[in-house]
Length: 190
Image (cartoon, rainbow, N blue to C red; front, side, top):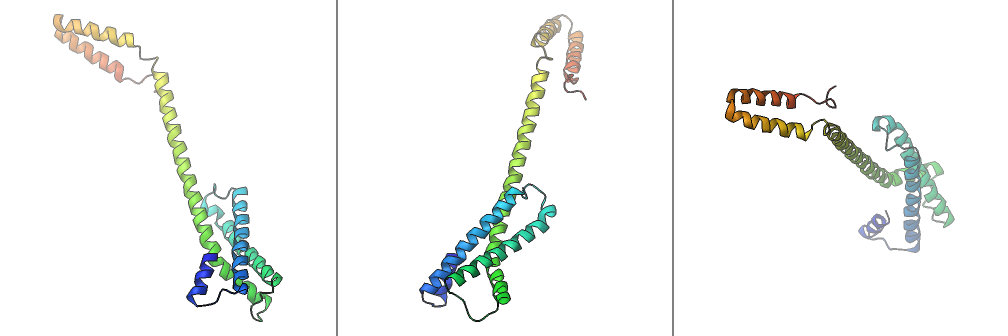
């Protein structure tokens, strides 16, 4: 905000007077205070965790209130340092300040909210993947005792001896073994 005001001064060849520097200090400070309070409200009421459609009206009101609050702080600072600009009435000055400060607060809010909203989605997706991996791991741990390695070892040795003595019976044994292994284990049945 401060940088944009300095760039504005250089663009329109204004001098950096004490009036301008005071104003260029008041505006960013009031913006920092207002946006920090807006951030605290968003965090306190967990608006980032709710669906956007549900929270949109509250967020809109919060941003407008933040712009009004920032404008009132600016106007108070300008009065404190006698930086009154022209002979505008209070309402006109307030509306002008709200629009002026809204040009900074609204983009800040959109960036802040978007970043944290998508970060929360990413974290939720990560938690979901971890839970899926944990479920798979638990399924494997419950299946492991069901598949007795000695049973498979003995079955394969028996089939190996049958291959030489009775090939057709060995084929049947392999078919039966594959059926047994293909059948879901108790942990997998639903």
